[in-house]
Image 1 (cartoon, helix red, strand yellow):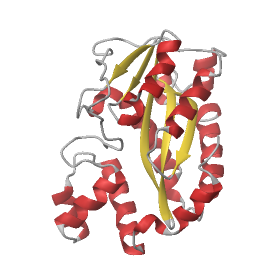
Image 2: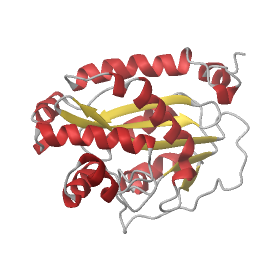
Image 3: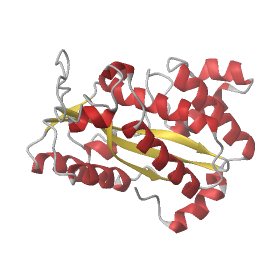
Image 4: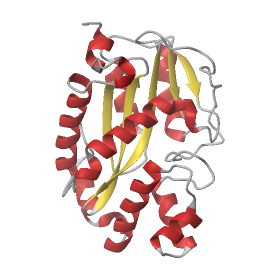
Length: 251
């Protein structure tokens, strides 16, 4: 689980161009949005007692689009091919049937980063993750390469329509392995609901309980958390089995 390059850490610790006050507001927006993903900029402005334009600008920097019911961390690219959503009314009843990937915002004490993960939809097993201080596609490519490098491949790979996932470099990965590509419908939060639930768990059980002084501290804590999530944490949706037990078929 590698993080952004060392030189990028210095950029992060300069607060990425935002004041301490704005970073505090962004953390609050993230916490509220995770609990209430239907809130828009007007409601955030009222709750936080700030100007609507300011709330809207901060939300956009975080990747939250007020119009939609899910974070739009990754903007689309009109020149990239968009693939149809393949999972409507399709039951997922086995491991390596469907993998999903998504990006979320993670606050730090003096900045923020983005987190991408790849998860097996049936077993809720986190196959790979990466951190980055930018939304360049590289960290998404590294995560999918690690997931595919384990030797098992899904039948369907589902993402949103963000430019990182629609880029030829990304879509070539599943194509080379005869994996069908599925993409969420625009503004449909429930299309990738399983990884949205992962983000809620990560934030409520780890991120919101801590204040990370550096990216490396966050990396260490997330590494520990994902090991706990995969290997120790029983899931009600899995009849209180652990993701590793379901994914590896050990119980």
